[in-house]
Length: 138
Image 1 (spheres, rainbow, N blue to C red):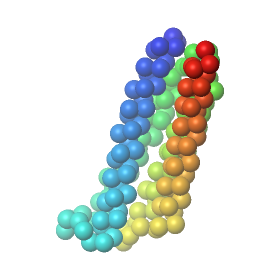
Image 2: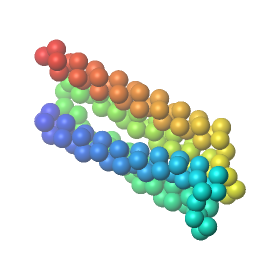
Image 3: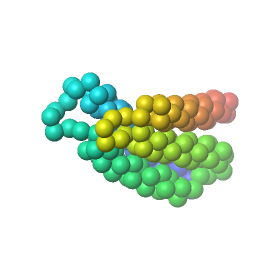
């Protein structure tokens, strides 16, 4: 694959990742609203769990699609980090999903998912910083 094609494809995938991340952040906000009672009467934790699980399934499919991207020479380390970070995010949102119980949120488990998600983002940011540094060095 040409470098330009790879960069364009990764940018498209990162745009999709941003959409998923926004959706998962909204679920966090909704959990909080449900806990404090600042929600619609029809909203509940079971319904939230159902919606969250549907998006986790879609996200898992997205991650598996990313494995089909073949990086050009010079991007294999970055691509490995990208895939490792996506797998960590996948595990993190699975923890968050498991933490949403019918009567409330298991906060230690949910917080563990949020922490793992943040760590994965840090690793991904570091990978982008390395690419940026390599591009400037050229």
